[in-house]
Length: 217
Image (cartoon, rainbow, N blue to C red; front, side, top):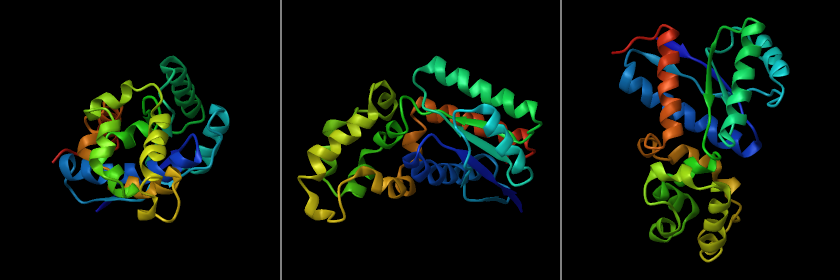
């Protein structure tokens, strides 16, 4: 059995609650579908590094040499040119210090919250609110969530409109960030694969595993 170990550098705390769990689940499914040999997908570990300074980030990565196979770098995909420039700067900084592990960007458009909005059933379940009420506020198809200019605000709208109305079902509060881990554990990966930015991550991860020597089944 071969292990697949990865680390992630995130933009903020709520992303750290959501993305590591989500990506670990997604890699499990990817391996089952495409690399069905015995692959032990380890938990995605959050790497504490300066997200905005490529050189400092690269220095942190060198200190972790040998401890991971894949480095995920999360950057929200808007504005697109800003995101692309920063990702390329990080890629070059890693190359300059000799980091040879796979580098895979994680680039939700516009924000990580867009991926949560792709699955209204899971969102309704976690928030303990009626799913038909959630659907009425969200885009009709998963692939449309990236067309919303402010997914974080839309998620807050769901909270303001629905959770307070049904708050007796969840007496532990109504701050959506408290639910990010539970959302990550349950969000439908199949629906996420209809979202263009997540589909791009899936493609890039597949290519990274091929370069690492994993083989298609």
